[in-house]
Length: 317
Image 1 (tube, one colour):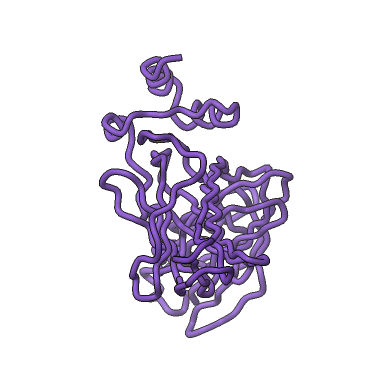
Image 2: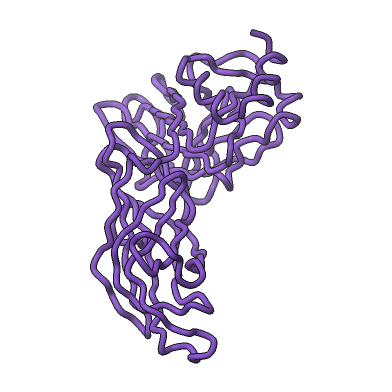
């Protein structure tokens, strides 16, 4: 099938659905770098969250990078992507290394929201080579896209000279669809009060057998009855550094968001008009869940607040 035919199909039937199906079937769509901007934007560093881990074996150390896109509905990942070690001060260590095998010409792979790139950057260390200490890995795409610098949990020795100096990269891409209602179970942790506000960790757990992704903020609202009847405004979204990046939930994994319930006595009665709620509705991505919780809320102004999703159960980074 030609690229033009693929693009016509995307325009008619929805980029996210068609791309997800084509990726799962192994039909990766590639687009030339010159036409990439006309189709969709590149996967920008500011919209990609990255987590690094380090493992060692005799004669070598591997930095594994897991990069998750938060760009909706999709973005373009450049191939070949370069990887280079950096010192703690940001100085480059060794050459830029590309995944093996990699194509000779630049192209772009269109991947949908929630996709992940897993890169394993392995370097020889301590065997007939001179080393330098690396604290980061720089991920750079061809063209004008800014690099993404990923910090390592601990410094590693990178071989930069000698008879066995080498670094290699193995890269794979995986589509992680957004979590839906059938995959998630919702619970609320024990309350913790502070300065007139009680905080509850909202917890979602992937109870399915396949991974899914969640990001951003939950939409939270109080209900007058278990069957509906919204009570008051939706919870205010509180933006904080380090919160809201896309989270890949493997089967059994959990994410959480901190819900703040302000004491209605903090507000003037006329601007608050308090009322009793018996439940909360929580919407996250395509998941919509109801949980019973007795509380007092303002009906004329928002007395609820919510932070963005983070991994784990505490609702805090």
